[in-house]
Length: 544
Ligand SMILES: Cc1ncc(Cc2csc(CCOP(=O)(O)OP(=O)(O)O)c2C)c(N)n1
Ligand SMILES: [Mg+2]
Image (cartoon, rainbow, N blue to C red; front, side, top):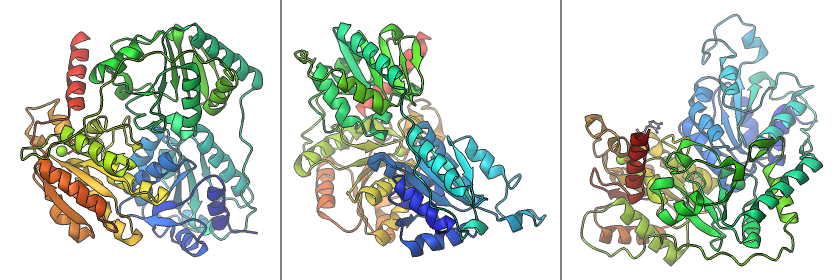
């Protein structure tokens, strides 16, 4: 019989995990020993647990399956809370495996190191930011508990919490089963799909809007096929940016309301039927909408339910809905795809001039770079770097576009590299780099060589655009390029388009170490998209 540690690792692998991210501690040392010695899953240790959570989150956003963060009790687990909260908000299935005291320590009568209010405070905290939890304190039930929780993570695409008391690691247990998926009730699925096909058939200008769940459940190709077959254009939300990268023929851009491309805004807001697939109805996606949804002609499929008009079909997985829609439009004489309004081309052709840089210059230079060398998977932090990413041609992107927590970018890029073996491009502001950029020091150990573009405006610029009078937004210049060699990478500071183009070319050619390109930006100069976002928010507030 396997031990609980090996059964848990094999169970994680059987449910789609392909690597672990973590930081050991005495309450999880025995488990880390088995992780290292068993080799069932590779483990990437990082330097601070927020990065462990961000890396696990980004890994699963790119590769699907499960992301896994292994942390010690208390100090480690509480450190990863913010990253797990962000994964919950953005529907990323991260499994937190947290060490905990064993039965003997619990019975000691002493307050335990790393304990907060009570020994069970950790469990109570994670119950708020995960969709399912298990404490593995009984060998007889542990395999079923693990199977239940891992199925929840996959079905809901949400984080889950597994607490592993340190004296249970070597307990003999049965293998962890893979429980059968819970499918939709066939009649409900049929009725729902037929109602949607009928709604779309009556519409003269329907639009499909896609967001995170379309990626989380691996349905991008099916959505593209459906859109092609029905001649319906697809747009992404801000949060869904980077989806359907492989379907440029149906994708018409990103919907940002009044902050976005006017042609895309008109397409969505003049639609007479909206099919919202995997869409998070959040402020960063829809705060700048100039029109409210007309729910009589709107469908929203997310979190295993489908709202059609003013009624809801519960417990209906999105991947089954999309398959049912395809089955009901099989062989349809696809209507002639409607001529769509031209949408804003992404900026290209940065002239190698000697002048100050703007964030949109970075987007332009990256569009040119991707045209020359092929697109790179991207990870972005929050800040103007993410708004600038909206001006980069629709490339695969992992970013906290809804939860909007800083510190995500660099660890996420490390997670993408570890999970996919691809070389990521990371976009990060100077403020966010101060938080987790130092994780780049871990690239050397794992032979990772991301390209990192630091937007250095020596400022919390996103705060300044809303509150320009505050002096606390003025940061000092940390000279990140100068620090790069100490972390095992290459750093270069650029101040003009000419230097930027050359530095990016050199970074692409340089392999084996991370390349940090520190782009100096004048304070007060933002991307075109952030500028539109701010004026859109201000006029939305004025309208209230
Ligand atoms: C963990 C966390 N703490 C504070 C904040 C609040 C915030 C949102 S944006 C921002 C400034 C970001 O500065 P940076 O230099 O990275 O980028 P830029 O604006 O383009 O100059 C802050 C402090 C958030 N979102 N998350
Ligand atoms: Mg900044």
